[in-house]
Image (cartoon, rainbow, N blue to C red; front, side, top):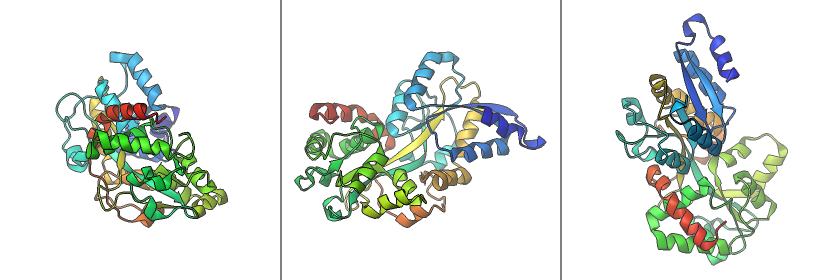
Amino acid sequence: MALAAGMATSMPALSQPSGVLNLYSARHYQTDEALYAEFTQQTGIKINRIEADDNALFERLRSEGKNSPADVILMVDAARLWRAQVEGLFQPIQSKILESRIPKNLRSNDEGQGSQWFGFSTRARMIIFNKATVRSSDVDTYEKLADPINKGKVCTRSGSHPYMLSMIGAMYERSGEAKTEAWAKSMVSNMARSPKGGDTDQIKGVASGECGVALTNSYYLARLMRSSKPEDQAIISKISWVWPNQSTSGTHMNVAGGAVAKNAPNKAAAIKFLEYLASDQAQRYFADGNNEWPAVKSVKTNNPALNQWGKFKEETISISAIGTNQIYAQKILDRVSYK
């Protein structure tokens, strides 16, 4: 919060704070600093930040209850946004800007009632593979990862991690319970090792040969691609990647998003901040700074990794439905012992 105060006092007199915004954020990317500084410069609204992982934010908000000073809550992944929604941590708002700029499939589906959240950036669930041991045609769909041809080759992070729960929730939405459970059971049989680590660990495992194929969110791979470190470039030289399901449902997409907190003391500033996150300028910060795609499709970016990848077919399942389906996804994972 000291940094936010510094942002405000460094502005000329006409930009001195005319209000405050208490931001609870599970985003912890250094590039977001410029995002917040620009908002303060444009509006004069001082940002007080609490940054923590999602579980810590949930606990803090529960303990604060109606006395919480939170105005805006930012979280990563539909599974977490859905969890906050059902716990009653958000409130509905009216904003023509958000309704016109954020696609319907990238926001909650209960506008005007209950609670409401919006996705502001997207990331893809990619398949990466070892170029020396695996053919792209054997791993170009999520379903093929469960095929016997990939037995002993597959690595993932914990199935119960929100990134995985959301992907499996999307599969549940398009294929139903029986097919999703059969897939999960075969995935367990195909594991090169027990699920562990984060997405960067999966990429490193593929490069080292420990894994033949793995799943990762796109921005982890883009981060390595843009790195100037020799060890990171060595990893990139040993792997390749595919956009899954290009001839069928499209690649699974997820979001980082936010909402106005249930008991926001500064609601007007909170809405203004969410509308700012949907602006062209803020959308470019997400893309160029943290390797995420803008939720506003008309925004042009200048990220070399994203530009190199070009266009691909995206899954269009509602992010809100994906979040809801994580309950069923977790039950399936428990039944097949997908740790």
